[in-house]
Length: 256
Picture 1: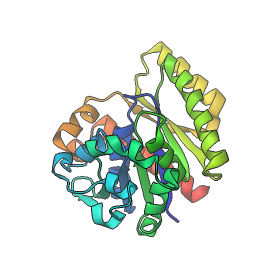
Picture 2: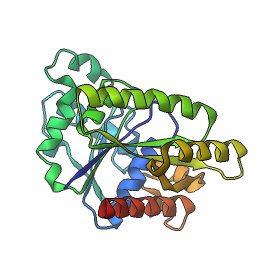
Picture 3: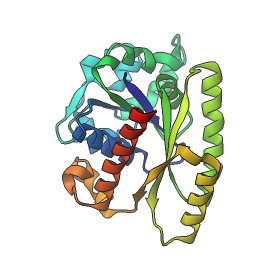
Picture 4: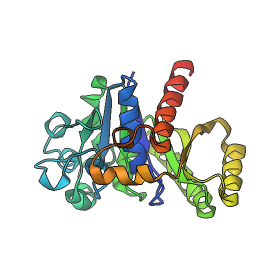
């Protein structure tokens, strides 16, 4: 069965897009069929997958507004080994245009339904905001992955996100669960990072992935070349961490 994961956190700069691109590539290496859906108007996951967002005739924007089907906008990330539904700045106006549409919170879910059987995993890279685009991602997903830095404000933002997930579950997607919390940009030398990490494990237990994504310059450099870290430097700590995360997810799926 296809697993649809929304990768979301309303706080920016926590590694959502890095996680989307590198996890998609790592699952692909593990012989999984993967679709990465970019619903962030910045289009960073699109560029990080090696697709030029400025040259696109059709994107997820056209899917959400009903002008195109998933199969008509789908691209192949040759660098990552997965399929991509791209995004660019056109998406910035989608929220206003979608307000008048019927079932506006379920546009992405309905669009993905016709192609979901083609994939083992569909990863949705959500924008850093709790807006209609993110709600579409949460409504389409089976579960949520929350990348977060281990810092003071992260815990405050997490409580807001958990409340949003509860509201989506109550009104739009009764089966929505938190798949896991992913500690990103982690530096074990930082005392606060260790303290916040311990708090997360105490409060969320098994919901916290055992895999930790370290601070790693190769993860930061890879997007400028339009490749996942796995293709940029497969031996880097960042690339190896995402391979480990993919393995942990597959083990969870097999035993769960």
